[in-house]
Length: 231
Picture 1: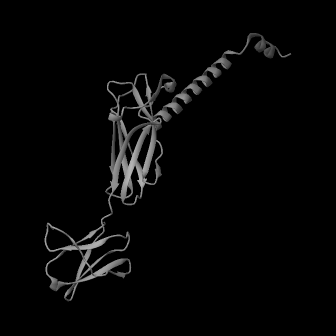
Picture 2: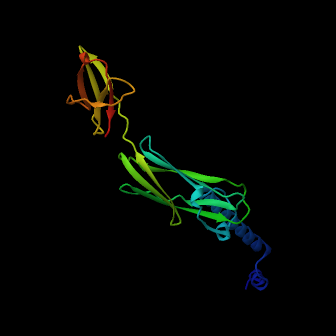
Picture 3: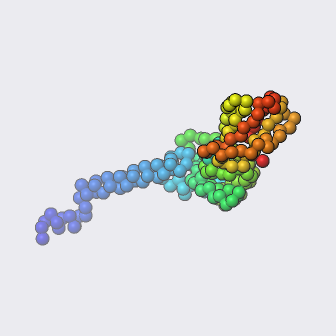
């Protein structure tokens, strides 16, 4: 047997082997630190040392610490959700803002938060996000916001009809009014004064000209104001 081989077996790994193993172990620890730290940064508010998940637990904020604001003036509709964290407090993390589920006029989302009872690099007062709800038809809706399956708030909101442009052009002794045919359901109304004590439906039948409705009104009928109304 080779003397060097026998010596290694008898006395165990050499100093160089131990050094190499030590370097590998430190490399694995360092890699784990960066991977877990990057994951915490991506999912939450702070990056923390390895083992953070074992130091805390799920957190369900009180309903009074949640603020929900539907943004319905433009399409697609979005909902802004802000969660405020108690101060002073341990670290808080958003592990999952959840997925929006739309079932008719009922919309729900279930988020997940985590609290860590270790030292924080900095403290934050809260976290917020916006949920895109897509293109919603005009009407009344309800949003249910939950955390870890616990319902915190139910917020009703309404999506108004979009505002359509009403174009006016004169031709001879008439005024031609036009507006898009899509979305449908709009009615042309008129009034002799502003502010109007009451709007009246223009009884002239609209004609279709390309992508627009058009209506001709006689100028001899006097001063009038017009608007599009979605009943």
